[in-house]
Length: 618
Image (cartoon, rainbow, N blue to C red; front, side):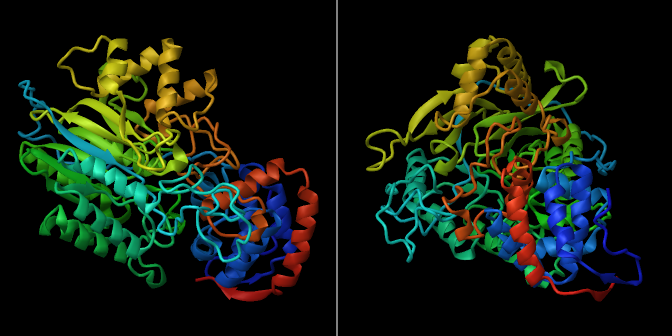
């Protein structure tokens, strides 16, 4: 298993880094399972010890020869830092092999009990509805604005990112990008403004569960556009909006990779809709805050879920487990306790759903402990990230997932970006006494409509109550709570038409996946898993580490990543570093010309990698 070991690590002593290019090439070539992934981390660690520059240059050469692409220049130094800090054979390394290469399965959860207050006098049963008229709340997510989007540019280009004007593009576009977007590209500004105009016509408050872009000016510009367009409050959550994308360091000492600018900017910009207390919380609690929605007894608790996210490489930089990175879980628990003490209901909003395959099982488990304790206070959970219209159910007993054990539901909003389907948003009908959801309506703009590129028309796509209520004999005053959604999953198991309708709704009728019996079983398992360790995800090379990758693996690549260019060797940037590594493992498993490519890679690396030197192990 460890035949690639060309040096010996002796903690506290100096050791020789004697990285042979053949070790690295063989490590790539042999990376087909969990053991061989751990073995690959040995030469990768040795490469990292040679410095970030050598590490990045070597992976860039590998990327070009194997015809892959990823954000090596930005994220490579973080991975290099991580590899220098961990053992290639520890539990953190297993997580890295699962979360990036897709060659290991997620290890067992590190047992930890979140300190929580015992239920007090405020922990009473949820309030009863008095039958008052509902009010509306809009939920939009994953806008993914590309401010370099250019109508008329090539949407089927040879670059990792298309729909932009490139100086070296001299040929007429094969597929001109439309004014309001293209399915190969992220959202133009015009599409985002069309969405905001649809919301403002209803004059209600909204929640936004993250993902704009990753640069300061663009985040600020979108905030300004929301302020100008909407007269009612918007309660946002932090997405993966950092630079490098996805990566939020665990501590403030990492000066060269400081994400505090994101929190400072959000704290300043969000005061349009929150208040000074929430603004201070955003700045000091890594983007998390809470606020009572105006005119309600509802506390909105916004949490930064990126600190539980497998794409955040900083979370792999130690072999010692960090149970609550940046205190996000403690913050959420404290705010729920405050809501309980005040007799309030609460909504939790965040970017990544806790049951997602992209969530670390450890933090998802600890978050679930909080939901178990405060589920009578929590009236709803709201997320984005997957780009799909879907839901997850939390249970008091995951060994017995049934109607009687269903305690909370996580609503997941579809995306605006056309990459994942027709642009869409959700509108909730909310009971003003209980703050539970009485109906969820999806509005979308069909990109296939003849008039779409002139002016998108936002139409009702479906009502969850009308679509699913008859399947379970839903009463007229019964909310769409966790018990309801579990009953819907049982109906889907028996009713193929109902399930396939749900499958089509996920992408709003575009990019509809084929879903057979195994796919359906996996999909329903995901619906019944607001805790990541129970979502039935099986890691596989080339099919892991995608923002919108499906649990059943029916997608060949994550939808939200840039399309593979016709000649990928032309550039080695674009998608996230994790996507590159997962595709590397997939290339090893499926590339018919692998030996030829590896021979070329070996020749290249022998010219690049310096000879042995001594490194101090601190």
